[in-house]
Length: 521
Image (cartoon, rainbow, N blue to C red; front, side, top):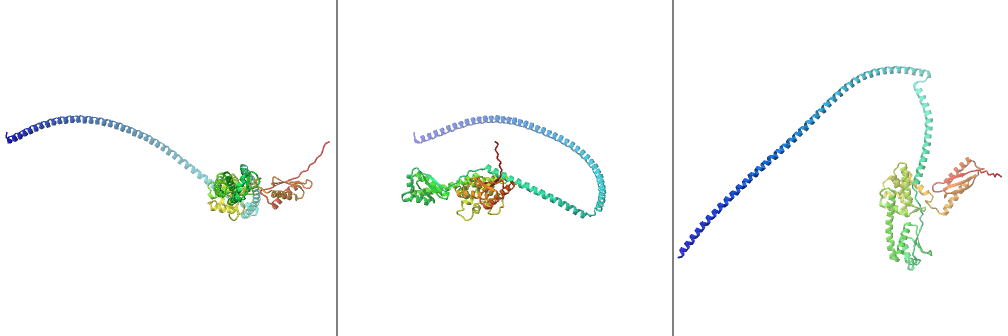
């Protein structure tokens, strides 16, 4: 077979194959279309059924909702009708009340009109009677003037003079009686207040000395304290400003100084050095410096405890530190901080008894001697120094500043709190055991008391008792009478006031008695 024929046959075969393929493809497409149309019909049928169901459910829900709305509407209508009925009933009741009030008002108006008519008639009668009484009064007054021979002005003048004379005598007597009663009541009340304050607050007093002792474990420690050629003790005394006495007294070393803060600092530092065992100049300087810092903290803490104990409110830190320094300051061997706390409590108690501010009174009492913490550094008396320091460090209350400056009568007293502080200060300082005197001064004061009492005529013996706060005088019964004993007692008390200086008060008692003794045999 030639090539051309082969090509033709191949072409025909290809055409036949293409036709057959096309025919097969058209048949497959028709089958797919038929199945798709059937599927679509089925889906549409399901969709129509679903739509019918949804419509039916929606209609049912709508009917239910409509039924509920109708029921709610009916309930609201019923409620509104009930409210309208209640309102109608209330309105009817109000109308009835208004009608009753109107009727009662009409009755009151009628009663008022009749009362006014009667009142007018009585007023006319009273005016008529008043005119008649005026005429009678004028006629009687005219007759009285004719009988007495005085006109109106003269009679009034005599009457006023007589009344003034009678009333002046009566008023003077009443005023004197009232003043005596008030004076007696005031003195009794004052004694009661002071006694109550003293009874409610009584603090112990301990007198500080000028030396402190430090225990040592053995006498060998004395040599270590002195050091080679005395360098340790010289360094210690230079750093602390005290005198260290190392004598033959076994087991102790004495620290002596008039400044109690320095003495306490030295005592603590020496105790630390003894416990540590390392005693040489550099260690001494280190321990003393450390102890001084601890002492400053301790002083501040003591001041804070005093402020809390007195309950006076907030206070500047510098004033708190000055209060703490008073712990190591004494006045006539009385601890100044204890004295200030006692004065504060006494002032508070007395102020509350008479209706004043107790906290303010305690503040005045606690700060009244604050100047004693710095009187060795500033010029002037401690009242003036204390007032300046308190004002400098934020104390703005005039009562407190005046109490500090005037508790020793250095200024004119303008506030009652100053009087309370002065009284409490005298009570705290003058009570037995509060302050200590030297033996010589104490004995001399007792001798002077007895000498003054014995200098009066009729006095046989005199004894100073109760630490010089009472003098018992024995009078000669044959030379003095009872009235003379009263006079001598008063004269002795006056002489003691003029001639002697003493704290507090001294009681003078004159004893006069006659004894008759006989024996029955």
